[in-house]
Image (cartoon, rainbow, N blue to C red):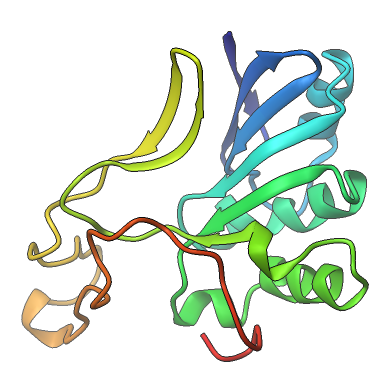
Length: 172
């Protein structure tokens, strides 16, 4: 296993090379994904076993829209936060297009959640990719404003295993 970091202009993308032309991709940067796609092509990646978007700011998620187009039917699971920023993102619009076109199924879409234990995203032998977030009862980290202004709560299912998204995609 190797880990590569690609400079994708407004941020970085992490590519975990898993062998057998497979990779996991964490974040994709902004709309300009040429560098990321070149890295994946250089290593002859055919399948992205996990596409993980750590949060829904454009500098992390917008490039994932292009990645969905560049790897149709070759992304096994897409992991993302379900929040208000997702609903207006370029990435979410592309996810919905891919589902509507039948190139991505709802069972391939997974929620990243704040949980008490690490959330396993991928495991293959000794390789483990997990999300480690703060305790479910901790307040969210704030960049702007005061914490008392934010009334968000962790989802009631925090701490449970991730589940596929069911139902309509616009009911998040």
